[in-house]
Amino acid sequence: HAAEAYRTDLMTITRHVLNEQSKYPESRGDFTILLSHIVLGCKFVCSAVSKAGLAKLIGLAGETNVQGEEQKKLDVLSNEVFVKALVSSGRTCILVSEEDEEATFVEPSTRGRYIVAFDPLDGSSNIDCGVSIGTIFGIYLVKDKDNPTLDDVLQPGKHMVAAGYCMYGSSCTLVLSTGNGVNGFTLDPSLGEFILTHPDIKIPKKGKIYSVNEGNAKNWDEATAKYVENCKFPKDGLSPKSLRYIGSMVADVHRTLLYGGIFMYPADKKSPNGKLRVLYEVFPMSYLMEQAGGQAFTGKQRALDLVPNKIHERSPVFLGSYDDVQDIKELYAAAEEKS
Ligand code: P6P
View (cartoon, rainbow, N blue to C red):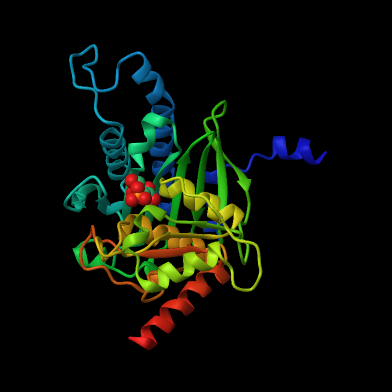
């Protein structure tokens, strides 16, 4: 009966969010409408990414199509789809995209109260070899929708009202938090709906996996080097951790969220602020980790306390299982005391 009930009581992402929003009597359904447009963008990208390999096979990608137009790169195409979907939702007033140098201020006539910072297709360099890639987004509320300014965007991540990612892999999985925990939805292509498949995700308190690009080891600072050393040669006789590094943030973070462990993109001598972008990579993933019972650290402070000065600012990040991140926080604190 449970299986039958499950099949007939379809908990779609829209229904799930409506249930959550009903807890706020003042909510006017704006967030639900905004989310439905983000979901539309994810469905488009899921479809385009799954064809990308095929397109390359039949020689479409990078060539001119039947109208003689240059086939757009998938990340550019995805960005255009998300920007158009978000503007047409009538619920946004500022958009920050990894693909656009400047923030987009929506026309007053179609402006809403939400700010969306997003990476439309993170890890897109991995498309050609079939590695999972993803869309990452963070959502803020504007202070005064009649006078939106960049200050509304340059806010600490703890002011976000929602964050999520959609991973385009063996299946299309959307992981979302609106501040009451984390839920995962999987696209059922036969319905064209995201169905709740991972309710109330909690990250294990401690994990057995560390995830970092060891190729940068030469340039790491002392605390990171010490932490990775402890993962490989544990002092307390515990077994070493496994190294898993896909090189696509959404895939590495999704595995960390479900299996536990730590994902790191540390600062190094070459890039003192690391590589990952604050507004649409570090903040959304840090928000999700905290909502799932984990934590996120920049090497200096709680990631969500960081106040960005520029919309494409970078920050080092260590995120994942609470205890694993705590271990590296203690190593940074000790290094701080010595300095
Ligand atoms: P590296 C992909 O290019 C990306 O932005 C993230 O998705 C990923 O975590 C990171 O860069 C990988 O960077 O330097 O290890 O190749």
